[in-house]
Image (tube, rainbow, N blue to C red; front, side):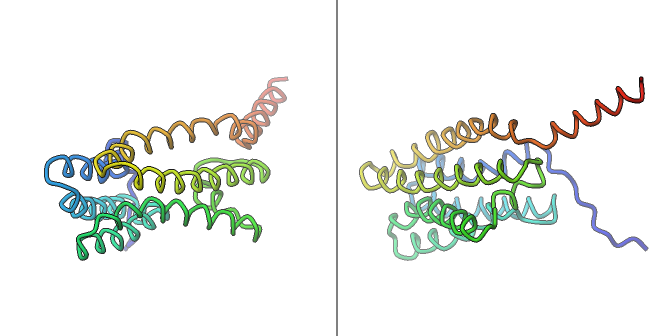
Length: 203
Protein backbone atom coordinates (compact mmCIF):
# COMPACT_ATOMS: atom_id res chain seq x y z
CA UNK A 1 0.00 0.00 0.00
CA UNK A 2 1.43 3.36 -1.04
CA UNK A 3 1.22 5.76 1.89
CA UNK A 4 3.31 8.52 0.29
CA UNK A 5 1.61 11.91 0.44
CA UNK A 6 1.26 13.50 -2.97
CA UNK A 7 2.67 17.02 -3.09
CA UNK A 8 0.90 19.29 -5.55
CA UNK A 9 2.49 22.29 -7.17
CA UNK A 10 0.81 25.45 -5.99
CA UNK A 11 -1.10 27.17 -8.85
CA UNK A 12 0.23 30.60 -9.76
CA UNK A 13 -2.89 32.46 -8.63
CA UNK A 14 -2.95 30.60 -5.31
CA UNK A 15 0.74 31.33 -4.77
CA UNK A 16 0.12 35.01 -5.49
CA UNK A 17 -2.80 35.07 -3.04
CA UNK A 18 -0.66 33.40 -0.36
CA UNK A 19 2.17 35.91 -0.82
CA UNK A 20 0.28 39.21 -1.07
CA UNK A 21 -3.18 38.30 0.22
CA UNK A 22 -2.43 39.00 3.91
CA UNK A 23 -1.02 42.44 3.10
CA UNK A 24 -4.06 43.23 0.96
CA UNK A 25 -6.32 42.23 3.84
CA UNK A 26 -4.33 44.48 6.17
CA UNK A 27 -4.59 47.45 3.80
CA UNK A 28 -8.31 47.07 3.03
CA UNK A 29 -9.35 46.40 6.62
CA UNK A 30 -7.37 49.38 7.90
CA UNK A 31 -9.12 51.69 5.43
CA UNK A 32 -12.53 50.47 6.61
CA UNK A 33 -12.13 49.55 10.27
CA UNK A 34 -8.84 50.91 11.63
CA UNK A 35 -5.41 49.58 12.52
CA UNK A 36 -6.44 47.19 15.31
CA UNK A 37 -9.05 45.36 13.23
CA UNK A 38 -6.54 45.36 10.37
CA UNK A 39 -3.98 43.73 12.65
CA UNK A 40 -6.45 41.01 13.59
CA UNK A 41 -7.31 40.45 9.93
CA UNK A 42 -3.61 40.33 9.07
CA UNK A 43 -2.97 37.65 11.67
CA UNK A 44 -5.90 35.54 10.43
CA UNK A 45 -4.85 35.97 6.79
CA UNK A 46 -1.24 34.98 7.55
CA UNK A 47 -2.48 31.84 9.32
CA UNK A 48 -4.70 30.91 6.36
CA UNK A 49 -1.83 31.55 3.92
CA UNK A 50 0.51 29.23 5.85
CA UNK A 51 -2.17 26.51 6.00
CA UNK A 52 -2.74 26.76 2.25
CA UNK A 53 1.02 26.52 1.62
CA UNK A 54 1.15 23.40 3.78
CA UNK A 55 -1.85 21.81 2.01
CA UNK A 56 -0.26 22.21 -1.41
CA UNK A 57 3.42 21.65 -0.70
CA UNK A 58 3.41 19.73 2.60
CA UNK A 59 5.95 22.23 3.92
CA UNK A 60 6.08 25.86 4.95
CA UNK A 61 8.96 27.86 3.41
CA UNK A 62 11.34 29.42 5.92
CA UNK A 63 10.71 33.09 5.09
CA UNK A 64 6.88 32.94 5.31
CA UNK A 65 7.17 30.89 8.50
CA UNK A 66 9.46 33.42 10.19
CA UNK A 67 7.23 36.26 8.98
CA UNK A 68 4.16 34.49 10.35
CA UNK A 69 5.74 33.98 13.77
CA UNK A 70 6.78 37.63 14.04
CA UNK A 71 3.32 38.77 12.91
CA UNK A 72 1.68 36.65 15.60
CA UNK A 73 3.99 37.97 18.31
CA UNK A 74 3.85 41.64 17.43
CA UNK A 75 0.26 41.54 16.25
CA UNK A 76 -0.71 39.93 19.55
CA UNK A 77 1.12 42.65 21.49
CA UNK A 78 -0.59 45.31 19.37
CA UNK A 79 -4.04 43.97 20.22
CA UNK A 80 -3.31 43.13 23.84
CA UNK A 81 -1.78 46.51 24.69
CA UNK A 82 -3.84 48.46 22.13
CA UNK A 83 -0.59 50.02 20.90
CA UNK A 84 -0.01 50.15 17.14
CA UNK A 85 3.73 50.64 17.65
CA UNK A 86 4.28 46.88 17.83
CA UNK A 87 2.78 46.07 14.43
CA UNK A 88 4.80 48.94 12.94
CA UNK A 89 7.96 47.41 14.39
CA UNK A 90 7.26 44.07 12.71
CA UNK A 91 8.92 44.90 9.34
CA UNK A 92 11.94 46.33 11.15
CA UNK A 93 12.38 43.17 13.22
CA UNK A 94 11.89 40.82 10.26
CA UNK A 95 14.27 42.67 7.93
CA UNK A 96 16.89 43.15 10.64
CA UNK A 97 16.66 39.47 11.57
CA UNK A 98 17.08 38.35 7.95
CA UNK A 99 20.04 40.71 7.45
CA UNK A 100 21.68 39.55 10.68
CA UNK A 101 21.18 35.87 9.81
CA UNK A 102 22.72 36.30 6.35
CA UNK A 103 25.68 38.31 7.66
CA UNK A 104 26.37 35.76 10.40
CA UNK A 105 25.96 32.91 7.93
CA UNK A 106 28.51 34.45 5.57
CA UNK A 107 30.93 34.92 8.45
CA UNK A 108 30.50 31.22 9.31
CA UNK A 109 30.85 30.15 5.67
CA UNK A 110 27.16 29.30 5.44
CA UNK A 111 25.03 30.81 2.70
CA UNK A 112 21.40 30.93 3.78
CA UNK A 113 20.31 32.56 0.52
CA UNK A 114 21.59 29.47 -1.29
CA UNK A 115 19.79 27.28 1.25
CA UNK A 116 16.48 29.03 0.55
CA UNK A 117 16.83 29.55 -3.21
CA UNK A 118 19.15 26.73 -4.21
CA UNK A 119 16.31 24.46 -5.34
CA UNK A 120 15.11 27.10 -7.82
CA UNK A 121 18.39 27.82 -9.63
CA UNK A 122 21.99 26.69 -10.00
CA UNK A 123 24.86 29.13 -9.56
CA UNK A 124 28.54 28.91 -8.74
CA UNK A 125 29.70 29.70 -5.20
CA UNK A 126 30.90 33.19 -6.11
CA UNK A 127 27.47 34.05 -7.48
CA UNK A 128 25.71 32.81 -4.33
CA UNK A 129 28.14 34.76 -2.14
CA UNK A 130 27.57 38.02 -4.05
CA UNK A 131 23.80 37.49 -4.04
CA UNK A 132 23.82 36.86 -0.29
CA UNK A 133 25.74 40.07 0.41
CA UNK A 134 23.32 42.06 -1.72
CA UNK A 135 20.23 40.66 0.00
CA UNK A 136 21.78 41.18 3.42
CA UNK A 137 22.39 44.86 2.72
CA UNK A 138 18.93 45.19 1.17
CA UNK A 139 17.24 43.74 4.26
CA UNK A 140 19.31 46.02 6.49
CA UNK A 141 18.34 49.04 4.36
CA UNK A 142 14.65 48.13 4.52
CA UNK A 143 14.82 47.80 8.30
CA UNK A 144 16.26 51.30 8.58
CA UNK A 145 13.79 52.66 6.04
CA UNK A 146 10.81 51.23 7.91
CA UNK A 147 12.02 52.88 11.10
CA UNK A 148 12.36 56.22 9.32
CA UNK A 149 8.91 55.97 7.74
CA UNK A 150 6.76 54.86 10.68
CA UNK A 151 8.36 57.33 13.07
CA UNK A 152 7.74 60.30 10.78
CA UNK A 153 4.39 59.73 9.05
CA UNK A 154 0.82 58.83 9.97
CA UNK A 155 -0.35 55.24 10.34
CA UNK A 156 -2.26 55.41 7.05
CA UNK A 157 0.83 56.71 5.24
CA UNK A 158 2.94 53.95 6.75
CA UNK A 159 0.47 51.30 5.54
CA UNK A 160 0.49 52.87 2.07
CA UNK A 161 4.29 52.59 2.14
CA UNK A 162 4.07 48.89 3.05
CA UNK A 163 1.65 48.11 0.23
CA UNK A 164 2.72 50.47 -2.55
CA UNK A 165 6.36 51.03 -1.59
CA UNK A 166 7.80 47.92 0.03
CA UNK A 167 6.47 45.37 -2.45
CA UNK A 168 7.47 47.26 -5.64
CA UNK A 169 10.90 48.05 -4.19
CA UNK A 170 11.49 44.40 -3.37
CA UNK A 171 10.33 43.32 -6.83
CA UNK A 172 12.61 45.86 -8.54
CA UNK A 173 15.55 44.82 -6.36
CA UNK A 174 14.97 41.13 -7.12
CA UNK A 175 14.77 41.82 -10.86
CA UNK A 176 17.97 43.87 -10.65
CA UNK A 177 19.80 40.72 -9.52
CA UNK A 178 19.05 38.86 -12.75
CA UNK A 179 22.26 39.96 -14.55
CA UNK A 180 24.35 38.66 -11.64
CA UNK A 181 22.43 35.41 -11.54
CA UNK A 182 22.77 34.94 -15.30
CA UNK A 183 26.52 35.57 -15.21
CA UNK A 184 27.06 32.93 -12.54
CA UNK A 185 24.40 30.47 -13.70
CA UNK A 186 25.40 26.82 -13.96
CA UNK A 187 22.26 26.01 -15.94
CA UNK A 188 23.78 27.96 -18.85
CA UNK A 189 26.93 25.85 -18.66
CA UNK A 190 24.86 22.65 -18.56
CA UNK A 191 22.95 23.79 -21.65
CA UNK A 192 26.19 24.58 -23.48
CA UNK A 193 27.53 21.13 -22.62
CA UNK A 194 24.35 19.51 -23.95
CA UNK A 195 24.61 21.53 -27.16
CA UNK A 196 28.26 20.46 -27.59
CA UNK A 197 27.27 16.82 -27.04
CA UNK A 198 24.52 17.08 -29.65
CA UNK A 199 26.92 18.67 -32.14
CA UNK A 200 29.41 15.90 -31.49
CA UNK A 201 26.81 13.22 -32.08
CA UNK A 202 25.68 14.95 -35.27
CA UNK A 203 29.27 15.06 -36.52
